[in-house]
Amino acid sequence: MEKWKFQGNQGLKSSAVSVRGVFNVLMQSISKEKEVVHLCRVDPTDNPLFSADPVAAHAVSTAAHSGNFNGYPPTFGLPQARRAIAEYLSRDLPNKLSAEDVYVTVGATQAIEIILPSVFATPGANILLPRPGFPQYETRAALCGLEVRHFDLLPNSSWEVDIDSLEALADDKTMAMVLISPSNPCGNVFTYQHLKRVAETARKLGIFVISDEVYAHIAFGSNPFVPMGVFSSIVPIAANIERNMEITSDPPTFMQAAIPEILERTNDEFYSKNLDITREAANALYERFKEIPSLICPHKPDGAMAVMVQINLSQIEGIADDVDFCVKLAKEESLLILPGVIVGLKNWLRVSFGLERSAIEEGLNRLKAFCLRHAKMSQQISA
Image (tube, rainbow, N blue to C red; front, side, top):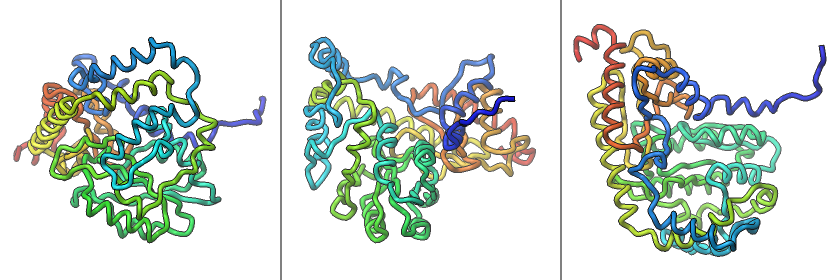
């Protein structure tokens, strides 16, 4: 028998438990008797309700047809794109950004891939990640050889950071922490006061803050979105990422060329319309969960497009855990919901509301029927 001298990267085992991986498992479990309802993936681009503004299509088409953007872009992004992004982001910041502060990447995932190895050069370094959080950070940290430590977000305190657990985890090898606001997967928006406290704690610990603001301005509750850059005088911004960008791929040049027009000409009505749709969906989702036995939604979502819901397994029969719940739900109801273990919370569910109300209502009807079907006898009587 041949013995190979190579083997797969063991760090990739982290990605075996991923959003896409579990989604594929659930898709294989679905019933063929009903049309599939997706309450699992936060991808509004798949929904006509959230179609891109015509300005975006025009800007991309114009750039592509111009013939001026067919080659490789500069390593850190087209200058005009970097300037437009800096001006756009500076609207919310006390200290204005320059084009040199902006690095253009192929989405947030590539930004994660670039920044983690850029910041963590110390042997034995560790990073503090939120629980629950976005699993891509943990996967990339494993590939970088970083130790991952999790601080808790508190469901009964609007998913705020447990500052005590954060401080207890840090040591002299802690390089950074990740903060996601508005939060995927929790649906909360941190207040100014809480973010300031986190920033002050990070300064005291001497650690870098990676602020994930993918859902910036998708805030529709009582807390307005506050960028972490507001506290940049307290927590420093890292700039040592250029070397890594020199060995990575670039966003398509013509797409970068479209950015200035998209940011300048997309009107406020486009954003407000989408916020209204998302707010109504979030409110409806939260109210309907009050009617579903064995499930608890501790916080009304006020940002992003997903929310965490706890399963009370003591009230359900024939369900072992959150993964078992979601697999059987897909099989019996053709309803796809992500198990919470994917984002760090076992026996919870991550539910997306970035789709039309009719799909949400249908999905929750099926979820309620499933929970009633599996409820213990005492629960069925009370229901």
